[in-house]
Amino acid sequence: MAAKQILLIDQETEVRQILHLCLQHLGGWDVTSVSSTQDGWTKLAAKLPDAIVLDILIPTTEQGLQFIQDLKNHPYWCSLPIVLITARAKWLSLQQMQQMGVCGVIAKPFNPIILPKQIADLLQWSAEKCHNA
Image (cartoon, rainbow, N blue to C red; front, side, top):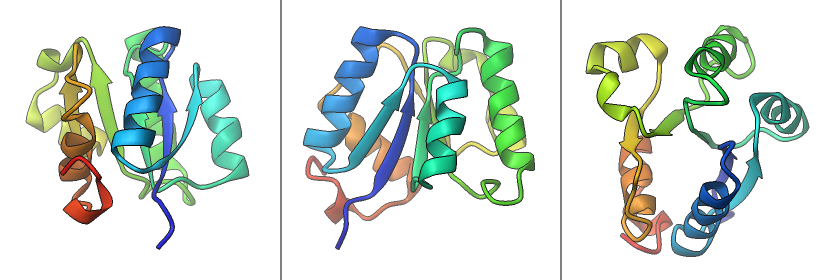
């Protein structure tokens, strides 16, 4: 079975590199990493991923929220699952996440060792897909 495809959007270069390595090597997923939502749209147009992992502060919370809203309003990408990874995880209530249509939020700083399992759990992907499960 082919590995799941993840589109990772995080503006911080070092964090993006750690996330990429973690999701690819520990999660066993194919990861495409970009630093902006603009680059995210380009990658989405080229290839549909199985999920998006997004830092909500790209570069501002408003821009990240607008990306989510635009994605959810698009007929082709509206069902694409999104997991947020952000330093502001505590700012979001369950009701806000449901309204945004995201699967869940993971707080920064995160534990790279358990991150793939956390993401797999939020996306309801079976444990066999995640090498770290």
